[in-house]
Amino acid sequence: AQSVTQLDSHVSVSEGTPVLLRCNYSSSYSPSLFWYVQHPNKGLQLLLKYTSAATLVKGINGFEAEFKKSETSFHLTKPSAHMSDAAEYFCVVTYTGTASKLTFGTGTRLQVTL
Amino acid sequence: GAVVSQHPSRVICKSGTSVKIECRSLDFQATTMFWYRQFPKQSLMLMATSNEGSKATYEQGVEKDKFLINHASLTLSTLTVTSAHPEDSSFYICSARETGETQYFGPGTRLTVL
Image (cartoon, rainbow over the protein chains, first blue to last red):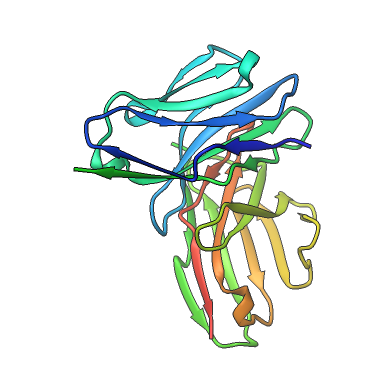
């Protein structure tokens, strides 16, 4: 079965410092990987996606993620955190042949302090 | 582009009544729509997948007679919670997919059953 693991349930950074949110997925021939962000009481917004093209994916709001097949990882990074980045982040995977069913990680809450 | 709306955003109802939630894709035709449920501080749980003009496919453990899903057009899917009880209180989120793997999420509906 497909699975995705977000290694940190909570991450706290100071404003202006780098952000790293970690994600590992179960190995498969052709995964598609996504990062979504959810602000309180809101739906999910797509930050970026990897679908077998370039391994370094750039998303919105300065976020990017690198697909590393050898490590089965898809970590999300941002060079400089902003207060507005405080939210819940979900790493999500789907595989070819699963009728587009998404498997969600458990989420990482990002806190940004002054 | 790729905007999904949900209505209502928040609903409070009495136990035993039915509640209908609408999900619309505003600027694209959604071949598939998905309904999720999210408990506080938890990840999303897929309830069902619906394709336009056909019966929804429910995930294991989801009562199809309790959660009625209709996908009458390529831009509209509805979820009706029948005979709602307090344990049905939750945050319900829909998503829509045109082609490819990417799902676009609605803003969610907060259901409170008294």
